Image (cartoon, rainbow, N blue to C red; front, side):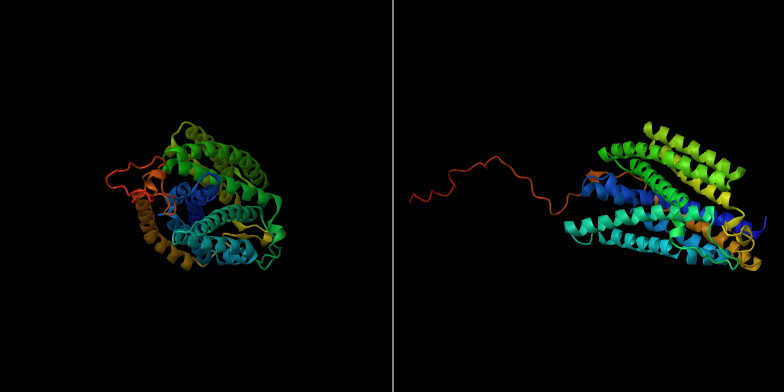
Length: 358
């Protein structure tokens, strides 16, 4: 196995880790509108990912940086051809981060509602657009002999890609609902489990359509194995969620994300971006890779720093492992004080005299 094959696997692992972690992260953002009934429940959901959402995005930065260094031609073609959807994702991630930080800066209901709307939309759109992007990568796009994308933006919105976007949006929301059931207490926990069950069934339908289409189009034996694992994990997640085993259900919902993304990379290999104009013009792990010396240096750097990042992030999740409920959220400062309709007792010795008496 050559180093460019190793780095294709490592980049696949980075994207799998990103979608596993940011998947439930996006799902929680969508659930602030689908699941939460009031401000305190929205705060509960936001607090479940508050300590970890920014760390989850490290995986995206690392995946993008590794692609740039290990496969510069892949990076150049991908980011130039998919410029608008990737730029939209970037804008959403920036606004989303600002929304998490600024939502509680003012005790004003309109201010908070505006940032909560921003959290919802900037979670929903990337969850959809990532599916569109990866569906196009696996299916193939119009790449010419100069390794340049010559199609248009509308070419990326084909039926296969739109179906992939719907799958990732539904799958991430399902993953987030299972995570919400794992991390919350009380009524919101029960409603998260019920919603996860419905989302899981919708995910099963979309996964059968999209992953089956992908397997028939570009699949192989390896991707078929990953497809079977994804189906088994989804069935397990539904059964465990129904039984109230939130921890195991979350592991299984995460396994669905892992297996589904792994299937896409297994179906893609040894290409990194197939050309629909001519298979000879496709970008592969060999013709899009950096020099062997560059890959060797990158391997040493990754071997040193990757375990440190994993240890730190694992420690973060361990520290913030406890459940949270509305009882942990103080009532809003602008909430009206409770009114006692019973008249207060009056002391006749200290009560003021009526106005018509001397």
